[in-house]
Structures are given as C-alpha cells and as structure tokens.
Length: 180
Image 1: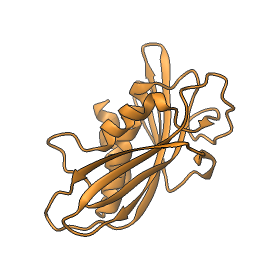
Image 2: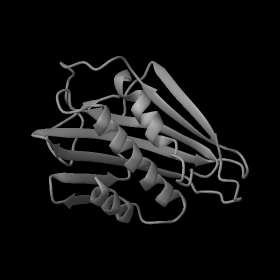
Image 3: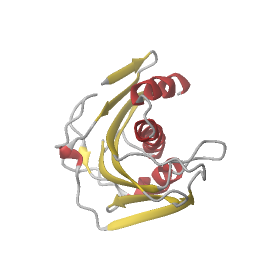
C-alpha cells in the first residue's frame, strides 16, 4: 500500500520484501521494560519504505522487522542487524515501490538513529513485551541519511505496534506523513 501526501512525502507499507534481506556482521540491541499493562501482542512482520523531498534533495530509506511476542510483564527488546559504513558504490538490486532500486543492507552509520527511533520516546506507548528484530533494510547511496532512517524507523515502530495490537498500519502511515 502506497500513501502519498503533498510536498513529496510518500510511504509504502508491505508485509515483506525478500530482496531487502541482507547479511550482517553486527547486531545492536536495546531493551526497555514493557508497558506493564499485561497486554500481549501477536507475531507480525512489516516493511516500510519512505521517500521525502526535502530542500531540493530526495531522502529515501527502507526498513523491515519482525515482532515475536514475549511473556507478559517482560521487556521489549529491539535488535538491529547492520554492516559496515555507508558505501557510495553499493550495488542497487533491492526492489522499491517508490523509485529506482535500492542497495540492500543497513550501513552502521544509520544504526544509532534507527535504534533511537525504534525504542519508544518518552510519552509514547512502548511495544508490548517481545523481540523486534530489524532484518530488512535498503538505502540509496546518494539519497539516504540519518534523518531518512530515523523517520523510517519511527514509522516502522508505529506500523508494527498497530499490527501487533490489532490496529491499522496504513492509518498510522497516513497520520505520520501528515506530521512530517
């Protein structure tokens, strides 16, 4: 499903994108207490892609993750698999719904932004207890940056949370694009 808004803001949400699977040498991890309300989520997988015109440039990013529910009262754990720093000559073979092909993988340059956005900021409800594992990612060697991946990670967390708790991820994407 593709969601578009004025100002060059576009997002795509889909169940999976196998061409965005990538080998990763490293895993970054953060853990946070679950919300403590006893709610358990259900297993889910989703992939989000964004394209945003910003100051004459086009930002692009693709992230996908799976969520496996944990025991009630447990922690919400986020794992992000990643590789080496950004390579400007990376081969672009990952399918995109919002433009030309992307390069599969998550450069280590973007990991802090991704982790920061996946762990719910203060005031936002965290994911229920379980494991959120980022295992799909793709970037544009010239159009991807920290800001693009922070936005994609925030959208991924919101879409997965909606899916895990029985909500509508497309409605979440529309609301997010209105805020960008």
